[in-house]
Length: 391
Ligand code: HEM
Ligand SMILES: *[C@@H]1O[C@H](CO)[C@@H](O)[C@H](O)[C@H]1NC(C)=O
Ligand SMILES: *[C@@H]1O[C@H](CO)[C@@H](O)[C@H](O)[C@H]1NC(C)=O
Image 1: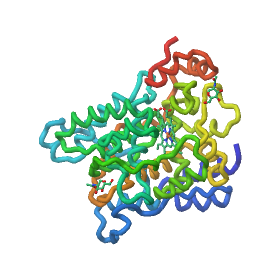
Image 2 (image 1 turned 135 degrees about the vertical axis):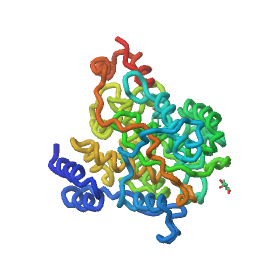
Image 3 (image 1 turned 60 degrees about the vertical axis):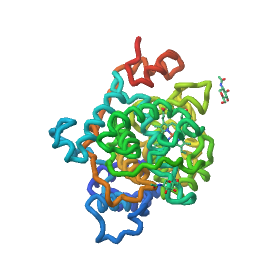
Image 4 (image 1 turned 120 degrees about the vertical axis):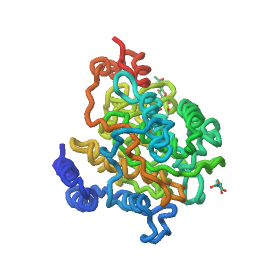
């Protein structure tokens, strides 16, 4: 453990109120890491004068520029009005609490880990919003088009999203009488997927995006064999900094790939799939991670690049979890609003999310260990469904 990461972690834990401005400076001083997250304004917030900002517009503005938190582990409903009550109809967030509970149940397995639906939802949120690039114009972001224009079925980049796309169609049909949009369903689903993975951040969630049935421009999503240069320049066109990419990439902590190495279907990207811990960062840097762990070349390229290597070390370090959760949440709020042009009219519904899980113990550690050594092939399926591995 290097001194720099201990110090950095301690600072991150100590200064929760206003973590980033101070943290940036301190980190830059004590290590070569400059954890500058993305800070530019996007969408309608780019041009709106400050005195025209709504309450939510101001909240999002502050998250984007880095003066306010992207996660909220506390705000919640103490009592939710029944789904079809007048009280529920009068409260924009109420129906989302009901949707969130249905999603939570569908996204969690018997081991308490998040399942393939949760991970699909997280990735779907990225792929719908990530269709945006300033190079291809103002449309194509978080507008539901991935599902509405069948990009799920027609684009190679979306391979593996079939299950979640089908489920989103079912939920959309079920809840459309409450005038929800597919765009919101996808982004809210991504945030539910994240928080139901044990240790996952509770990302602040906003409602009110508009749908678009026109497919997003093709070619704005990264490939698993891309170089660091390619990835960094692609995300720059989405207003996301190299450090922001690292925070977002950490979502691979939950993953079990199928299509990058078809001969290793179900093999995870770190030794704890379905759990939002920091092992992904450590094991992506290690030359000999557990046998079953398989790394994407794109992840390895980012872990080796001088611009981002330090942050893999920091997030993978002993006290990295808190700083990473903070960074992920802030970057994901940004991602979830790409191509959205009515940010100032959105409503915050973070209180509709399931609760944050700050600790987790694997109920089947010895079986998981055995799987990671290269035995018990059948465990890959249990891990995908979030269920306890049978003896
Ligand atoms: C350079 C950027 C990225 C590349 C090249 C990439 C590529 C991939 C690939 C190839 C898979 C495996 C699909 C499969 O074989 O089933 C995957 C899985 C996944 N990705 Fe990414 N990804 C990137 C960034 C992100 C970001 C920014 C997020 C979320 C914020 C994300 C979330 C996920 C999740 C949750 C999974 C697991 C899906 C599952 O287990 O079904 N990825 N990614
Ligand atoms: C939907 O996206 C297309 C381009 O992809 C754009 O021309 C159109 O104006 C958008 N519609 C709405 C309602 O935003
Ligand atoms: C699996 O496929 C990769 C290439 O995709 C190859 O390098 C590797 O040797 C294959 N492994 C086995 C056991 O066939």
